[in-house]
Length: 510
Image 1: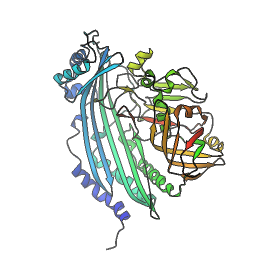
Image 2: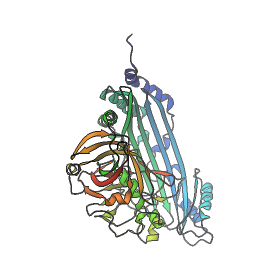
Image 3: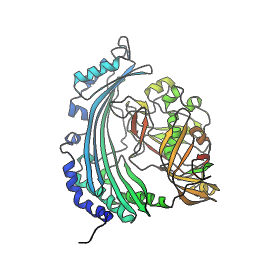
Image 4: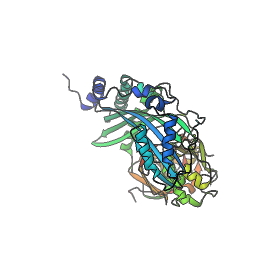
């Protein structure tokens, strides 16, 4: 028998072992609750009635709270992971419960329970009510459902798609990664799908239900050349239908992951110091999100933490810079039909032609500033309280072309992708690792670069954007999650190519 090297073994063994392995690992009987009609889901499946909601809300307001709300959640998540040629991890998990919030001024009382019986909910409501110390002053209003658009319709629940239909996705990614380069020695392929059903019921009369999908197909590869190893990854997804995951999507995921790993063998470390930086389109919008967007969340401004606390109506960037936070982009990861307070999803202009025009508000900050909520009240799960959070945050197109932006730089760097960022919200100081990029020399992209950080200050970076191109891209992935206050929520981000006239590059050469 001919000997087979490790690379060939891993490539060929996947198809033979995946179905059997996954079938033995993945539990069965987890999906029955997912098949009910979306309308009145929590009523049909768990017996939640308007009368019981009114009773629980009344308990939450019983000590004098200003308003209260209920957040019901039922989430089913599935994971299939192929590594070393076989599916060695495939599992599901379920989250079910209700979070009960009482608000008094800007103070929050919170309780939650995994039991959706009336006794347990009343006990959680009593906990939330302790934020106040008086007599009930507010009554629960009759519930009405707001008119909502659906930015992520589903013709089929992903939790009802059989395992045999999902396995070929990770198998294709595995095979295509090995096929794209002989340097690939290890592939890990993931497919994740989640459906999150929520119902928000508020004391001021809102009752809204939603089904929020989230999914992605991901490849991580390790390449080897002359004894050196490089790794990279890539994913596509969002709030997609299962039909989105075609062989073409698997091809894109695999090829991009491999190309990003292989190019690093030729990468250099650029000089350190202050220099012009061109941020490429798409995923570099995470800098906009982290270094600038958080400073425009209203709670940081209400508490005087953010640099932007006194900047409404003032210039924060050049006139060709407009920044948006938008919940209404179809299938985008940060899109929501309504936020976790029941406010319908909408588009909010944060910076309009260089002028700061709005913060991102939940109900508490909106009352403080005497404005309407922007639909940015979000939470990780029923176990967490609400905070103002971003949705899809991006910069609009500018007047330049991407070619003109690059040509304007004599010597600098072009950033294609970043990771592992750190930000100080108050000051806006940040540092990000550049995972993909190029040198710019005499107005042209030259050598790939690696192992560097870019550092700066968010508000200063915003002021230092001197060119914005017309090639806006939004991140197409499904893994993006934003951390704040110990919670992670799915978000989207993006931007066109733009030139920052000076940033600190932490290279290693003099």
